[in-house]
Image 1 (cartoon, rainbow, N blue to C red):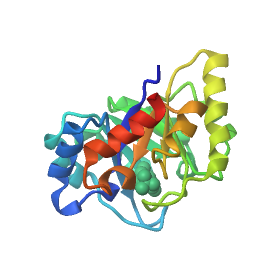
Image 2: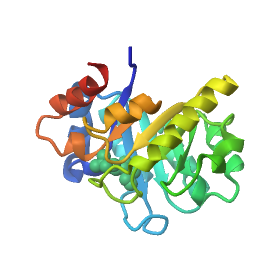
Image 3: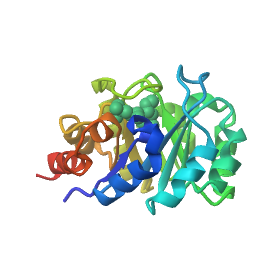
Image 4: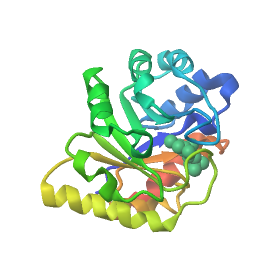
Length: 220
Ligand code: DX5
Ligand code: ZN
């Protein structure tokens, strides 16, 4: 009954062998690959840019789900589109002209997502819900893997699900941060359909078993 997608976050992968890491989770049953891009300004951590993603792209056929945790994300949209992004998600908190940025992403032939931090209400993105393919609800404060899930974010997932029903519009509801087999049932029950999991997948030796455990937690 529950049709969810699992998007392992390569933030918790071994950066010395990213190609092998994405290929392994693809073989193990992943649906999307979640690519966390951090600039050291919007969040207090740094990862990588489009060049690194471009070298990962040939190692998987799965959609590359780019999560831009950067200031001025519009500057990086063309490069990530060219590098093979299937979806580009920007933070509402990082965009003065959010509507413009979302349409810029679409003009590049890429699906557009909007993300909100735990302290940002759903009302902050209400005016763009008809413009997006995905809403990413941060269930931890962005910047690091391995943090504890913030339960107060659940009601925002419910609010979005109800909005979709009331308005007859469709977009993915993705959750990111602290997703494990213990928290997955809660977010799916609330209305999420794409689950990002970093440490709960790449932190385990057997990635296939780790993803199966998450999937079973919401389908059994
Ligand atoms: C956090 C990133 C997440 C992170 C999640 O800022 O956006 O994608 O990798 O890691 P876990 O699943 O370990 O909380
Ligand atoms: Zn992320």
